[in-house]
Image (tube, rainbow, N blue to C red; front, side, top):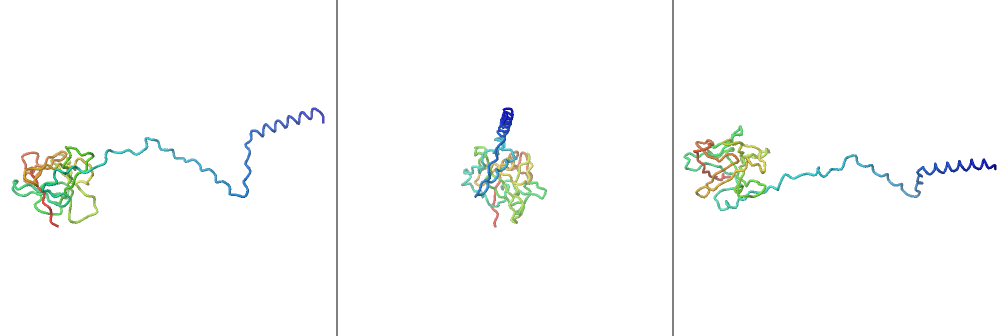
Length: 215
């Protein structure tokens, strides 16, 4: 074979080997077994960043400290009517009206004067929030509607609103008054005083009492 021909063949083989080196070899198919499953495609959803983690709104709610009232003649957790004391003359009863307003114009045990006092929920028990209660409408006829609580909307204005655990406007500080069983109620905006069924800012009767409703 002429020398020139041999040189041309050697150059051609070198070029072919160089091209083969840049090609990824294909694995031979396996025999006698199941072919491996294809690798899963990566998720298109981005991984949550640390800032996306849920946050807490504060300490867990706990019941107000009611230990001071354990031996006080007040019924908690059962339907009662909340009334003015005998010193006020006629007995005026805390009453909820169809328009949502609340006053002391009630005169008897009715569906709208039945209330239940329960310990209020607080973030942390303190001296300021001890003896705090919520006042929940408790009609004898049960319904599927959410519970309603007496809410201190603004000074002298009380309304019935859906109960919200921990809501400051629905927390009432119960302060023992005089004889056992008498008390005052102080809300977020209103210290309750009653004059002829109306809630007044001053010169009213502040002593209240709660009488359990017979089944």
